[in-house]
Image (tube, rainbow, N blue to C red; front, side, top):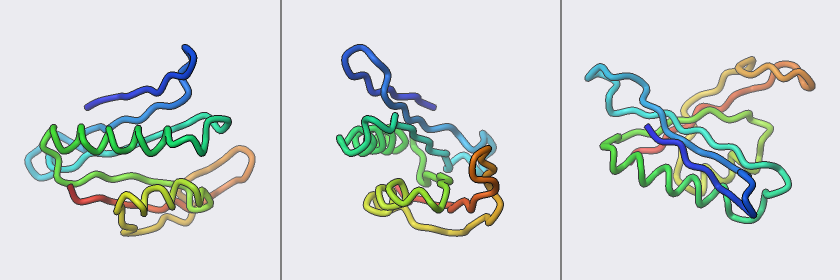
Length: 113
C-alpha cells in the first residue's frame, strides 16, 4: 500500500494511493486506487502524474488488477482513467450520496497490470 502527495510551493495539492483489496490468496492480486487534486490545480497534469506513479507502484508491488470507483458525472476523471486504459465493468446508480447533489451514479473501473 502506498500514499503519494503532490506539493506545490509547500502546499499539498493532490494525493493518490493504492490499497490492497485483501490479503487472502483469492483477492491478493487486486488493489484499489484513489486520487484527489484540488480544483484550482486541475489541468496541470498533476492527476496524470499521480496516477502513473500509483500504477507503477501497484505493478512493483505485484498487483495484477487495479480498481477504482468514480462518480459518473465527473467526466474529467472518467476521461483520465479511460486514457490510462481503465475499463468500465459496472455501475451503481445510487453508489454515492453527495450533500449537495443527493444520490449519484458510481462507475466501477479496472485496469489489468
